[in-house]
Image (cartoon, rainbow, N blue to C red; front, side, top):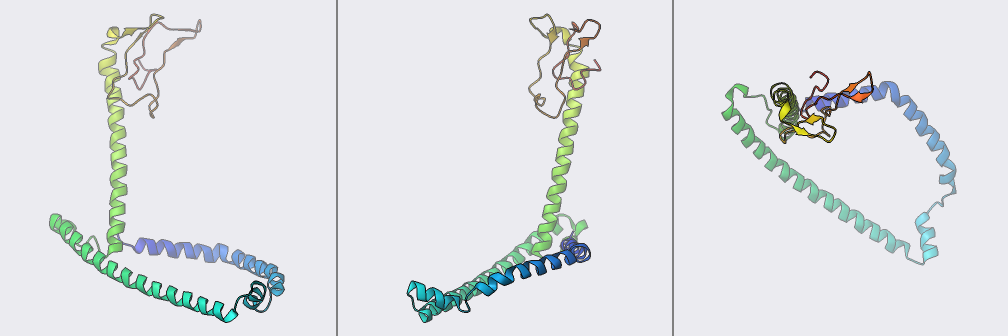
Length: 214
């Protein structure tokens, strides 16, 4: 698991763009450039001088301020590059430590993680996604098995112990350890006698995932 997959994906996207989109983008750029030509021609040759004449400022002073701002921006970029270099060095050292700990704990997988911060990040993200998917599948399987066991082994056997509803239909309460009725499981419902369109006098446990089978 390395960052090569990112570079290969970027190359694939660039190839798709070059083959299917670049021609249309070039035509659109030419059309926009032609549409902007009258606007550019209407602008004065020296906008700064015209603005200074209307506002009443000195053009040389304004240019001096722009030069100072440009110098400050270049200095800030230099400081940011130096800070980024120092942070990259610290990340490289931290990556070495983490990879060493991983390889000492699992020598069988030695060399699976390349010793760069980017490759380590890709490996961690990949492992996190895989673990999340496995946990969701396991949790769903446990919920499914729990509901089936409750329906088959518990609810049918103890149906007579349920609470009586006003219309005389027995209904067992949903156990607290099961997911709520707003979850992905189908809520329980009573069966209907289609001969007279009246609810049948039998119970369907609220915890049952398969109300039509029992």
